[in-house]
Image (cartoon, rainbow, N blue to C red; front, side, top):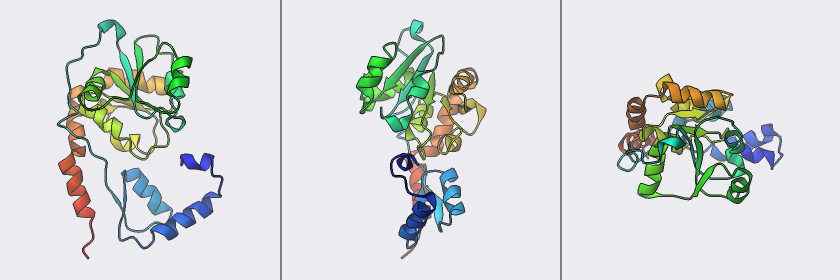
Length: 225
């Protein structure tokens, strides 16, 4: 976990403390199957999956309005902070297209000055955010520490394939080649996602994370009292 970079406790003690804290729980709900499996390996009991959801009434494919000469648009949406590993994305030399960062955070001013060729939009929400998702040609997710990554599902719902590292979160969402690409080489993942991504199938896959679907998953996890 990212906090271990700052709080340097032995991992054995950290896991022991977490198991003690969660042991009384009748269910431990975690955001992804990969995380559930990891927790079970660490000795946690009654671990079940409960995915994040996407509002399909807001996030859906919209007409792309940005100029063609900017494309392909390599898109990131999320918090602009050190734990998101944004430099791994911003340092990529794609050779074509435009990088766009949607979101705010403590690193935005610094990164905007360091990468003047990148479009930083600041924080967006609602219809404006949904439109920016649809503008992307590839959604680039450079984080290695997120346990789910709801923005990836929102991107898929807008018909945008994903490029990410093969870590917990991305590998639970990008489960087929037409949804994007996972690779330790983020540049390779980006171009592969651009080539293989199928917008219609991305949208179809996102339906697995709809609010009704995830609500049913939650209710199935509950324990009678």
